[in-house]
Length: 68
Image (tube, rainbow, N blue to C red; front, side):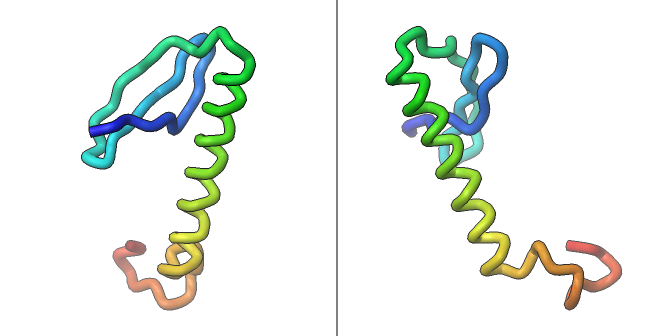
């Protein structure tokens, strides 16, 4: 499965596939590729935020005692 960037650390990029397998790669030395990685991570974060809004998981209202 293809792996996509989800976080950056000092000198590294953390990758994840759809099955939640993880890997670590070196940070790209090229500024253009580094911007592409940053853009991908930002888009993923925005997508997760929209999903949480849609599912209502950001709201306390409606949750039961399990706090799912």
